[in-house]
Amino acid sequence: MSVTKPKHVVITGASSGIGSELARLFVKDGHRVSLFARRGPLLEELKRELCDSHSSTSEGHSKESDRHSSESWNPVQEKPGDPRSGSGMTDGRSGMTEGVRVFTCAVDVGERDAMHEAVAAAVQALGPVDIAIANAGVAIPSPGTTFNATAYDESMRVNVMGAVHLFDAVLPGMMARKEPSLHGNNTATRPQLVSISSLAAYRGMPESGAYCASKAALSVLTESLRQDLAPHGIDCTLIHPGFIESAITARNNFKMPCFMSLENGAARIYKAILKHKRVYSFPFPMALAARLTRLLPAWLFDYVLKGKRGLKSPN
Ligand SMILES: NC(=O)c1ccc[n+]([C@@H]2O[C@H](COP(=O)([O-])OP(=O)(O)OC[C@H]3O[C@@H](n4cnc5c(N)ncnc54)[C@H](OP(=O)(O)O)[C@@H]3O)[C@@H](O)[C@H]2O)c1
Image (cartoon, rainbow, N blue to C red; front, top):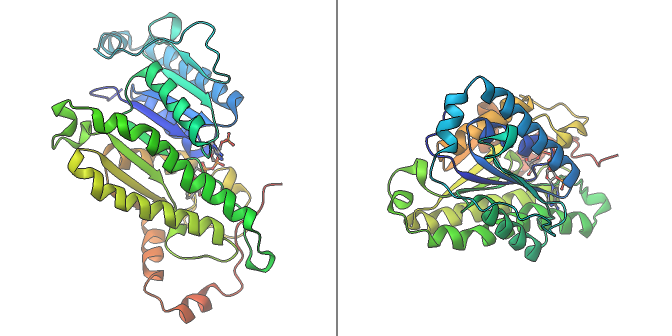
């Protein structure tokens, strides 16, 4: 474990892929995590895995565990018989899961009220939110030839409004925190909003108008927030990943340049979050190419992409 002060990290879309892997990395470093997604059973499975892996690690690191469990954060424990369906918390101060604190909540990020309730429950369970990661996302094909507003509705609802609902729920708490150490120049302690956008945000790709437009909106709103919130001691980190192994890319039947393993992709995102980077676009060759496409005139961009296919539907 390398953490100096354990943080409370909320991750949406934590039931699979990048979100699950980020949860593993944060827990490994001793942080508390709140995991949100619709598939509650997968969140429960991940919670069990996180607690089991910690208990086996901590057998060999008992001194380290002792140090963590004695630090002065004071989360409220889950009440027995809590009626919130699909949510649960593991109390790190008991049994085999000492030092691990995981809260889960089955929630649809597109539902504003439900997101407010989920964040309130997470705060009650694990304390004020230090890092909020808007990772939940859908990649729905949207070929112009079979134009369908539903693909746009759902992409905007999840990829854009999902992030907006998360930020809406956590920001008042972040703004209200007055501890000087949180709002100084020490970026490691400043509260942080994180948006998992995509290199697809840079330009409109074939058959992917809904996805590209939603990620472009997410990137642009995060840039605006960054400027507004920095003077208030809150950092914003915007991530533009290339192709990473996950359920989303498993459907693609076109060649994905610089394809990364899930572990590699998530580890890079994790490091960028810890460094409070403003923007992190990767891997480098793809990020450079994405930036350069912005300079291409439309006719040349269209020529380069002529005949290329886009996203595929889940089976
Ligand atoms: N993999 C890549 O190459 C790549 C590249 C660039 C950007 N990204 C972005 O990375 C993020 C994570 O994607 P991934 O690649 O890890 O794919 P993934 O495994 O399909 O993960 C997507 C996650 O979003 C959650 N989600 C979807 N709709 C939701 C909703 N309405 N409410 C709550 N959660 C919802 C899913 O959980 P439930 O189904 O349980 O709700 C799932 O946990 C996405 O925003 C994606 O656009 C991925």
